[in-house]
Amino acid sequence: MIVGPYDRGAMKEIVTAIRESDLGVNPTDDGTVIRVTLPMLTEERRRDYVKLARSRAEESRVQVRGVRAKAKKELEAIKRDGEAGEDDVKRAEGELDALTKRYVEQIDAALAAKESELLEV
Image 1: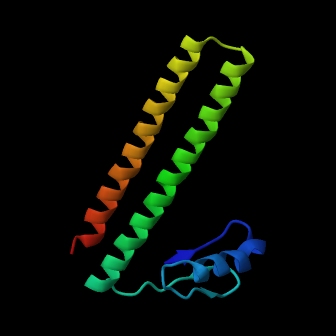
Image 2: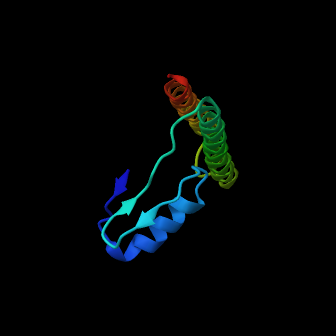
């Protein structure tokens, strides 16, 4: 794989980020492009990537739920301050829950698709 960064001043940061990732690759920098040699995907390596995808999906779910909790606190503050009625806050909480559920389902669908793609030989 060849990475041609738009900003050549960021080459060292990009190389460092790729090297420190959980991908198990070692990029080389020739001054203009970054070359990354990807190892052959063995069954064990595929399973490692699936584990990595699952952990990233869980991190994403946690972040979505964190945003939901923050929004819920703000809705409670609005209700407490009297800026909106109780019915409006309940409606907004319902919309927030539906939105959270939709994004968590999208994360789960993306994970399922990625798992099947990784395990396909």
